[in-house]
Length: 578
Image (cartoon, rainbow, N blue to C red):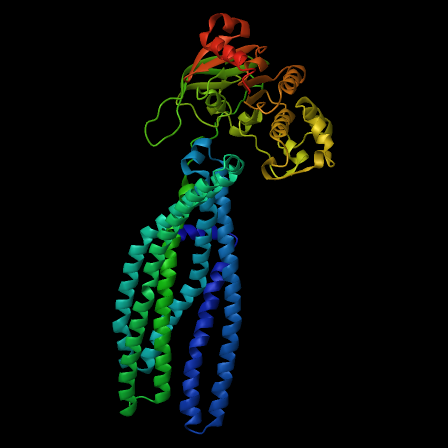
């Protein structure tokens, strides 16, 4: 695991290598100061030798200056290395997430992915900083202090060496107990983030239904769960403090008792006893620092596993390897397609044995009740999900044989959930085609019936949009998303219930612009209002995951009971959009 983490220090390896060396030099200089102090007392003050006082005093100043300088440089190098490690891990995670299919994101959940890229990586960064500075310092201090104490008084060193294994065993036991709790902490944090994210996304719904109290209760439950889980881990860590304090006190008492006897017997100079006591304090403090660092490392191990779970995940949808691609014409075919969403159990097919042909340039509507598989059907065309059985073909080639960029490059998609990004209207439209000219942007805006309201803004196309497009209405957002897709000039344009927030007259103008300016584009639209698509070249009726009928409006009215029932119900209730 450590070796793999180290591989993500690329570009910052020099800082990571320099920091331990500088910390080691800093620690050795600090350890030299008590020894030099003892020399001043023993060889200078007691012997009334001022030359020795000045000599060793000068060495103390030099050691202090070197320790200060190397300590500052070590902190700087450790900071660069830790932050660089975090940046590289986040980059690797984001690149993998960018390659995930919808199914992969569903499997991890967006809230968990956010936690893994932020909190988990921060945990790893913090431990990297601890290891590069505190752990190296503690280990160096521990080893060097034992050696120096052993050189001054082997008898007193034995006292410490008896207590060290007891403290080490207690630390290992504590790590074993805390490790599973750290895993649960991160999972509880996932749940907390998911609750907050869901509430913020749906804040308008929450307020409109006056459900703030319910959301507060949900947040309280998730927050309390995280707090109690964190407390269980932290209280066990805190338990280490009194245990270590008792061990330290016992060691000091034993050292002073034995050391005092040696001084009285003339076997040890009191100046060196003071130095030994100082070194033993350093040994015990170093062991405590090692313990705290190892506990932090235990928590980071849980985070590391979560981060590498994402990095190591193989996207369920990979690029096809077809070298020769057909010309983009817009022909779509479903051959005996069945599809199910990935669930923990076997799951049921939401699409069953779908066979359907859509010719280039056709205007095709997909209608049906809620939950009949309309969105699932069109999501298979750009390969957001893969079929369970059968084939989906675009221009005669199985979508699994396309490079994903090439496949999605010939498809324009306006999803059910209209998404705009922070930036200007122009920047959002250029998502469709970053090389589009001003004339093409204007034409797409006009075709989507968005040009009028865009020019009503003082900034026109350079008007800033807030994140998610919250400063425009639902209908305006839909028209901007349609314009963005039209800028692409795709071979296949898919609109998943993307005109539900516009009035019937505006929807009719948008539909007319498709016929006028996208003559060669295959348009597939999922619609709730039959009145808006009854002039389509072909209407596909979905029912319980199957194709219940295909034909024109007149043909379906004459032969398809399900279609006729949908039409009649909408005539009785207006246009079905009430």
